[in-house]
Image 1 (tube, rainbow, N blue to C red):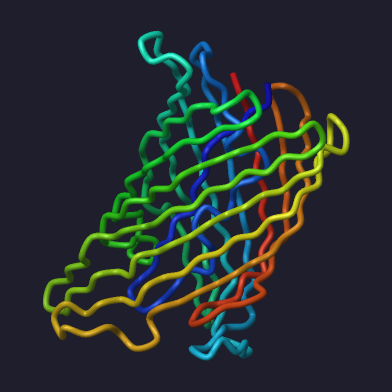
Image 2: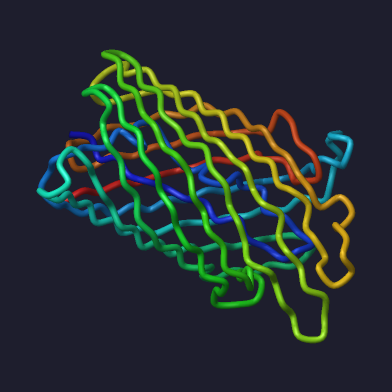
Length: 284
């Protein structure tokens, strides 16, 4: 059985800045090809990605040089999978995820641990080839330093699906990120814009070892609302579509490695994605 887990990318930053990563953009092939009626097991996952955003999309969707940054981020995740005899044919998981990040921009650099993400997921299999489920996670507001903290709580929820053919696989998700109001003493209060996102992966099972795949990631962010001034901030809504190609290496039943390159093809009010991703999975 392949080791297939749930994955997140945090959408963090100050109200005046945006991360270039699309929510859940780190997922790989078979991410939601999940079992039912199994004995409990554990998974450890290390994700990493780097983004050299040399250009920025303006409010008209035009790509202009400058305004981006070089970012490196990671997620260290522990997942416990379990099922219950009283609820047959349904699988459950609980995740604990710690984010890490480093940014180099405009002559400055900073890094550290970001918010912690926790939450459950549940799924069932409409037939032996497919999986459908739901996941919801809470993201804490604080990291080890101000630059890696959102300073507000947020919820990341999505529907998940997977379908397996003999030689191909198709899976993905669609969901939202909703944040609480950001209160800063002596300053305005802001409501972060609701995020809508979707991540799709289509792979070819070339051999038992290697699996090339195509990735499509989409995200749309509603504008940030200044609750004190009762208005939306100018140019605070954003949009991005990114396409990527990657390879999954199924080293063994308990071990896999995935790598991918992704680039933006459309955007608005956001640094472009010019990113590479890696994923290491160990199951026991």
